[in-house]
Length: 442
Image (tube, rainbow, N blue to C red):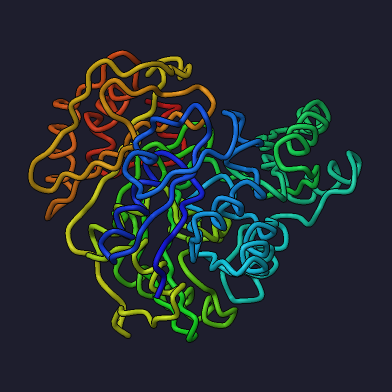
């Protein structure tokens, strides 16, 4: 059993981990940059250590400072949250070398799934359906040849990245020649590698992801799926569970396939397999994220489990407490990501929160790292809060979320709450007719 856990992150996910630790009787250590000295996660943890200036490369991404903080506070383990160092195998290895338990997947699993081309090959070998695509692209002429072999339109993607960076939709040879070097440079700047590959572009797919957990004893469980199709520039904005697009048979078949595949590789801790669902109802593997996801609360609510708590238990060597048979979702959950940004232009809106009132009531959950009088700094992700609701049916969940959004007050900064209200009021959303192009056509 651990006694003290350091959280190598900030904001709402740091508080989320603190809560699960507290419920298990564990003490917590927060790390923070100098601009986050008064942040909520530093105030609610048992101990807090400043690890550098606001620049993430000198604080939340600075491995020596984080390890030093763990050593001086005598922490037993480190939870990386999501983002920052959560998928960095060198960080996980450094933790192990320093006698610290990394609460997450094994370093080799991060390497297996972190490279998108390698992940596609691994997924195919494990029997997962993959979308048509290419191997690594050597140069522009090789790109032209591969793209024409697939047939336009194609999606040019960074092998080492995600989140839409280094990604371009290309409809012709001319567009490819004009955008290839830009995509390569963006990939190099964002991920330290200019390795690119192609996937066949699907015009209006749905984005479906499956949650998995694996323990150190070889047990693997699949905890249903999430609908993540509401996106802007490949960044998720609203998620829900379960997806209305999958039948019970599809859900059961894919869950069984994933469970077998993840068991074969001995997957450890929490992870998410992402798929595209085309207009013919076919699921094809997109990527695997070896970490906890931003949208994990919707799965927690419909499955009735604490995913972060399970991560901690797994790291301590305990077996999964989940039943052998597949779990079925209970009711419907929706999550709205409330960001500090203009709802029309999406321009970031950092600043001091002068007034704050978050929604409440039956079936409403708020995961947030802000407070009235606190500052939203410009240096990090603009996520202010995750507003999550749970209800017996999707229609009731939509009504509950509309009510919750209407009573949420965040003054001093601009937020995307009006955008969420437009989404929820749209007839197509109410009918479950969504795709990754939904916001483009809203």
